[in-house]
Image 1: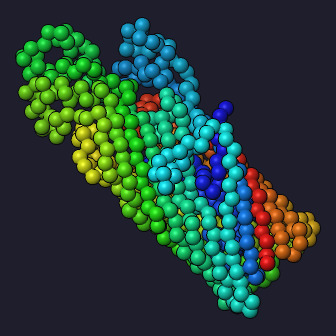
Image 2: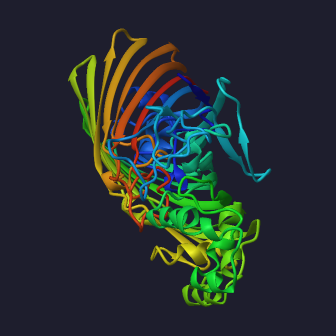
Image 3: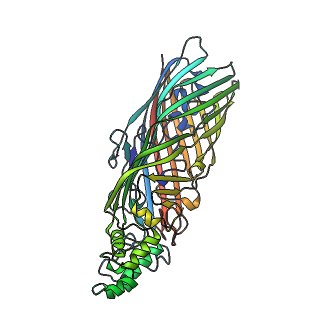
Length: 554
């Protein structure tokens, strides 16, 4: 079993893929505030100190004088992915996929005689996109990282307004594997980051029962990915059959007649293979300033009851960056072969194929991206003087992630070929159909005051997946999940509090063969992001977060 440890300031929760990316509940709110984590994030009516900036800025009015907070969080991720062969597995009659087949070159059969059984592609380390270096950085397998987040709030004497700011990460994702991992075809390295580096906020006490608040978040947003490419597609399987069966008699003695009849395909030095690597793609996009805002209301009509509500706005961005594609020899040879035949040239012109495929292509890339809006409301009720229960419901507009469309600054040869099989591809753009949903979720938390100084907390938050079953994939191993939290709060004196919290999230998913168009669908039109066509997939994600929060009033 392999595990990785993530920094809370630099890393929040996995995963993604650019399709990935990105997503389900994406680990939202796992590294913003430790007290909230221990209460199942059910804190809208009971906002946690300075981090009320995020959960409900109206709660800032609970702060008196000057208050600072520092958090230290250590996160441990155990992310496992498993691939297996179902009965009848094949792509256009071929099943000798080296990823799942033990057969070596000495076995001439196109049908695998010795399947590997279960193949693992576990996450091995954290990958992050570093803004100033503008590149992905691996943090090392098993390397424990500890990093702080911080915030400050000030309520002037006699004022009804409280001002605050904090540094936190609403969303972070990063993972990677070494060369040769079966998981590399859906992201050898993936990173999705949103870091709020400045959040001027104000909470205003309207009266003894009602407070309102607002905050403006100035954030950095980045998406980056490095992935191997392969296309186990029926059409490519047919091209392999043509190369191995039809072309074999003409490999050494072709002439103008055979070139015309066979379109020049047989002149390729290397034939197409649905299980072969077609190349590698790297891209990174970012925006240094992405503003958003939070609006909150806190109503406390009685000492034993309060109601809170918060709206976190969407953030629309135009991300820009660079890309680099390395093309494998087989597709280059296919086009080269077509160009040796008059009929091949005519066919290529009709289909809009390029005249040649270079070994590599680089340039600029951009995309419209929207960080989704979120709404949450909740209550706090004291069942007994020493026991309070929090309950929240929330909704996130993940439906805006219907497609991720990448626009390149030039025509790409690979896209000119792929567009004949997908309406989501043009000569210079690629749209990944995500089809996300906007789910409702709830959380519940309990806090027991054992003494005047000691508080015990527990929370539970079941998380409904935002990803439809026909879009599940290995780049997003957090789908339907359960989050459990425990915490202890201790007051050293009237001005100093210490919170110790632990959270555990578990998400397991099964993607049976041919059920996801973003992972393992078979057929002719499965060209985009189906590198595991025809295979069964399982994911098992366990995340443990341990942290300490130190709060001081001056």
